[in-house]
Length: 107
Image (cartoon, rainbow, N blue to C red):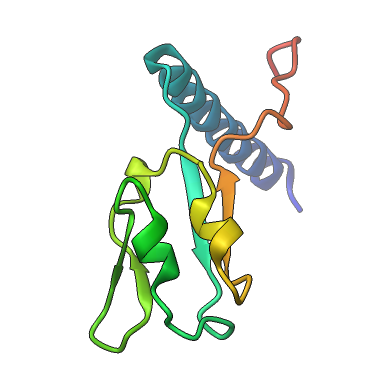
């Protein structure tokens, strides 16, 4: 890899990290945590328990009888859907976890 290509690669990586931190800090200022919902449709039998238990109506059933995420930003991370799913087909994770640390030297 040439030095120019390495510089471009490092700068784009830094931009992604900066975007991550900007969004994370913006959400912290608002006092809102965002969560990512993942449905493993191969495991799901379409029982609708996730739709019924969700207090924020994040899920709806599609015409095929499968759950669909329609309002992902409304999720409060209560994990009712994850805990009550008989097929273990739903996972809820923080969208901006604290495991990433910003380097103190600015790089």
